Image 1: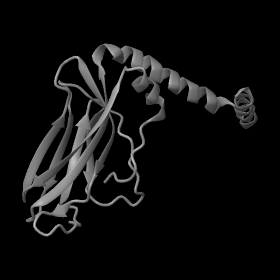
Image 2: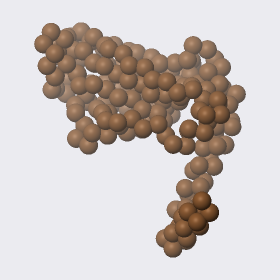
Image 3: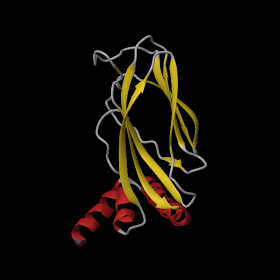
Image 4: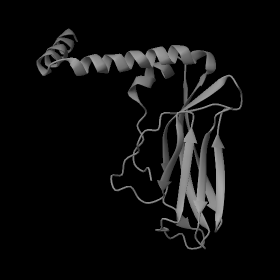
Length: 176
C-alpha cells in the first residue's frame, strides 16, 4: 500500500508555471461490501485532455462498523493504465512508508482503472487519493520532447566521472 508524503516531480514545475499543465488531486472514500469487487475509473471528460497520474495513496482498509484497521490479504486491489497491463497490490501497510511513483497516463479511451476486491465477511471502507497533472492532447509531443531532454541530461551526467560532476557543480555555484 502506497503511504507517505507525496512530492510533486520537480521537473514539472516549469510546465505548470508556464500554463501547459494543471495540478490537482482527488480524495474519495469507498465502501466495499463483503465478497464484492468494485471497479473505479479515472479519466478526463473529453478526447482533448490527458491525465498524467504521478502518485496514488491509500488509507488503511477499515471495518465500516468499528473503524478498526482490517489486517488481511483478503482485501486487495489491481490497477492498470496505458503503460501498465495489470498490477496487484495487497492493501497491507508499507514497511518502507513510501509513495512510489506511478507515471500513469489516462485518457478517455484508456482510463486509470482500479479494481478493489473484498473477500471478507466485513464491510470495508477505504480512502484513495489520486495525484495528477492535466494537459491538452496537442501538448503531448512537446511534453515527450521535454521529458526526453530531462532523461538525456541525467543519462549524460551518469556517464561523467565524479571529478567532472564536482567541477560542474562548483562552476554552477560560482556563477550564482
